[in-house]
Length: 342
Image 1 (tube, rainbow, N blue to C red):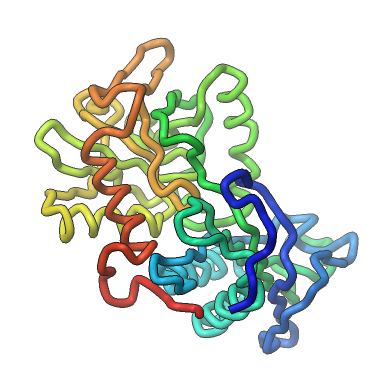
Image 2: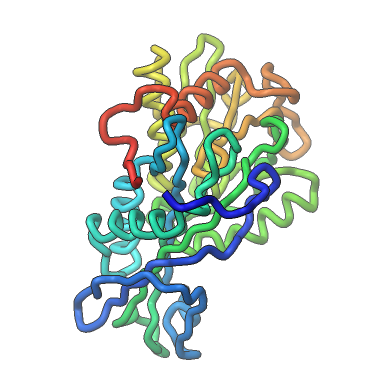
């Protein structure tokens, strides 16, 4: 294995750092090219490229880790590949095959192994696969040519100095319409969330809780993470909706809750009116695994969870410790969850 880069691993933030190689494949005349690694981090395209005019783009996010044994692995990349295929179909983009997606992940991590943070640093290598319509399109229609790229960047621990519970607000903006694109990872979903998150930060909140657009009575997600709730009797509950992005982290945590911790789990519609009855709340996603929520503010009415504002609640902490233990190789993983790179 190549020597590690001279980076202060414990002090890098969650930002972009250019690494040595990235993967590029092009779609033209009905087929995807084989794909190559390149040192060029820049993209050149026509001013009328479909992605610039009509936002025809999608992405994924996953991480590579150094395990306790010193192996470099990724966590359930096959599910990222499947989700990207679903997204591409919804956006009338040609899906890249699961095999090519996984090969791109392997090539990029191997080529940038010197940037994979060492075990115990709290840092990881973040992988960003994405795809966009690349040829010029002026009438509103899908592109004919596409580019798939995958780059990586080392990122620091999401929580520096421990996971402090955050305060979120019930948002007046809608994240996704019924029968819209809320269930896929389209760039346009994130573009329209920017105003809402900037507004939340300006008002002193860390995140938004989005409700269903049809009735505005049910909890959906935050735009970047899914919700997990814990009941008084220790059951783990997650909202069910056709407009929520199916989080790979959430699916994994629900499995861990049931199979590793012996907890009862339930995926169902969650009404805003019942949120005050839960004892713990967390937001789950690739970046942080689980962010604990201490308080939700619903137009001036405060919902404070018994787990408090100082640390993760006991059930969420157990879930966090177990899943990160599986990812880092400290705990035996379910078959197929850990994809060894080198």
